[in-house]
Each structure stands twice: as C-alpha cells, then as structure tokens.
Image 1 (cartoon, rainbow, N blue to C red):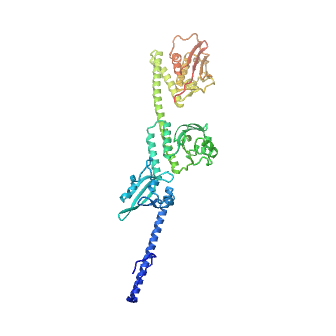
Image 2 (cartoon, rainbow, N blue to C red):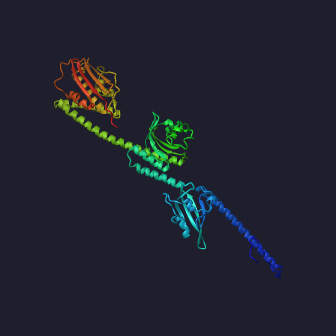
Length: 540
C-alpha cells in the first residue's frame, strides 16, 4: 500500500495471490481510514468555525503575530477598538502602530516593552496595564496579555489579547478627583476659592476646555463670572453676562435647580437661537450645575467645550457630585465666617455693654450723691432702658432699626403709662434706619430727656406737651428735634449739669458718630433739644 496522494483518496494495490479475502480486507481498511479522515476534517472545520465565532464576537481585541511581531490575524473587536481595517494592519508590526510611544510622548522601542519581551523569552505576560494608541492617535488605556507561540523550542509568534479599560480608568479618575476635591476643600476658607478649586478639578477631570463659576443675580437676570480655569483652546471668561444669551429654555432649567447638559449649542433647540452669541465666547457644548440657596439659584458651576460633545449620564452625575460638595463646603466656610464674626461682635457688644453699665453706674452714683435708695431707683431705670434697647436690637437681628422704633422703645414707660396724650411723635421720616450703636445711644438719650421732662419740664404737669420731629436731609443726615411746651416756665438754664444733661451734651455726640451735634436750649416755654447725625453703615 502506498501513501496518500494530494487529492486525499487512498489507492491500494492488492496482491491477487492472496485471493479475494485479502483484497476485501484491504478495501475495508481503506474505507475505514477515509471515514476517520472525514470525521477529523469535520471536527477541524467545527473547531475552526467555533474559534471564528469566539474571536468574531469577543469584546476583547485579539491579535495573532509572527515571530517578528507582524500581524497575521485580528478580530473585529480589534478593528473597532483601534480604528484599523484588518486588511491595512495585516503584515505590519503591531508595536509600531499601537504602542509606538510612552504616555509622556517619548519613543517606546519594542526592546524596552514588556509585551515585546515575550518574543525573546517565549513566556507569557498577563494582566499588564498600559496605554495604547488608536489609528487617529487618541490614547486608549488597556489591560492585556501576551503569550508566545513556541514550536520545537522556537518562538514562532504570539497571541495578544487586549481589553479596553477606559470606563474603569475614567471612573477611577473621577473617584480620585472627588477625593482630591475633599482634601483641598478642607484647607480652604474662602467660598470663592472653594468654587474655583471645584471648577478646576471638574474641568481637568472631564478633559474640558474651560470651567468656572458664576454668581447669579435673579433680579437683573445676569451671571457674574469672577474667575475660571481654562486650557489654551479657550480664553479665560470673566465679566457679567445676560442669562437670556443662553436661551430661555436653558435658563429655565437652571433656575429649577437642574444640571443642564447641551451637546451642541448650535443644534440644541434650547440654545440654537442664541448660538451666535455663544460662538463669540468659544462655546459649542456645556454642562451647568446650579447651587440653590433658600430654594433659589444663587450660583452656577459650568464646564465648556470648544467642540460638540456628547455628555454622558456618568459625567453629569460627576458634575452634580462636585457641585454638591463645593456648595456644601462654601456654605460651611460662610457659616464659620458668620460664627467668627458673631463671636467678635458678641465680644464687642459685651465690652460695650459693660462700659455703658459702668458709665451709667458711675454717673448715677455721682448724680444721686451716694444715696443708696436714689441710686437704686435711677440706676435701675437706666438699666431697664438699656435692656429694652437690647431687646429691640435683638428683634431686628442687630441690623439697622427704624428711628421710630428707638423713639417708641425709649418712651415706652410714658406711652404705656398714661402719658401718650402728652407726647407727639410727628409722622415724618420715621423709617430712617440707624445702626445698633446709634439706636442704643438714642434710646438712652430719649429716656433721659423724658425723665428730665417728668421731673422739671413739660411732663411734670398734666397740660404739658412734648413734640418729637425727625427729618432726613438731602445730604443723608438726620435731624431730631425735641420740643417741650406747657410745663413750668424756664427762668434760666440749670446751674448744675446732671447725668442726663452730661449724657446728652458730651456722650451722645460721640456715640452717634463723626459730624454729630447735640444742642440744648432752655427757652422760657420749655427745653428744646436738637440732635444732628449721619446714620452709620453696619460693617460686613
């Protein structure tokens, strides 16, 4: 029997001397071999078909290379992942096309590449993470394995399996960015620095061209951008801009507190009508995350792209997370600042109160000649007046209070004690606000004027009248006139200046601030007091 020829059939030369039995056995054996061969070929075709199904449908890129690293096979996933048609990459050295330089731009010879060492060692490299490059030059983070094909002790090729780990790396980068944001925010105290830091981390992590924050004015419908972060693709954007330039549909979503994403400002119906204005600042795609304060949008974190970009749900969630952390940190910083200011203000107020009480005690003691009963009476009345002033200021949150409130507060014992008909508070500029310091001084001053009027002036008789008028001048100053009539006639000014007179003539002007004047005229018909001052602004 001879060997099998190229056509795959079996020729058998059977010796006739053996008779028909031997011939029959030989034919049977040949048929059995043909059957076995056909089964082997079917199995091979099935394995080939199965292998093709696996490689065609695998999510990973699969490359087969010869001993020189040239591509001899690549599956469809490899074409999609790297942007190379199979017919163009076959025969090329794979390393030179997808792994030609390092992430920092330096050349990457195959002799220095761990994947290339497989060809020299005949070994296997598993779970290796690296950065490959697509045909268009864009990077792609990968995890890959490279196994040598060894025949008769010689490396004849290798099988490279590549998994795209972009999604995992992106998620890791965002998580790292949030950790970095938390670390940096803990060191910052300024809300403006907090917002800028959030914008910078957000823009860098998303690979955008510009990011920043703006303060929203819902009355003027403007946004004021004080500082931003940008790449060389877009210039810095600062200044004040009208919200309507972004389109009404867009701004309506923002004002509802929603994260707004626009993939292409020219084609999006919410912004298409205003695309020309947006082109002027280089924006084609954007993400905006608003900050809510008392249910209203007060600020916005934004991300700009110079080209159209499809924003993903994951990117929107990341921006939302950054914004929430930034606004919470900014509110914490503002709360800490308010706390510090409150402590400083409380310390200042306590010192002022103690100083005022000390002065009241000393002057009252002097004015009562050391008589304990008289001291207790007068000092107690002045302390109660001071307490009422503080109650009033607390009710106003230690913000400027209307001057009318100070008048009614100081004169409450008389207005509520049956003397209301003798005191006229003329309806003039009573809404003029005065600072807490000025309000306290005026309450004490009105109390002393009313006390003196009760002892010696218009309120010492049932028919006496006190008229108080307040007038705001065009220069911002305020004039308060206290006029008494119907009381005992004033023969001459008093020879001795009591506590009330000293407080009015010396202390009141100082407490009311620079440019303030106080004059007392003892006219025959009654005392006339003129108080002139400029309302003080309240710091911070």
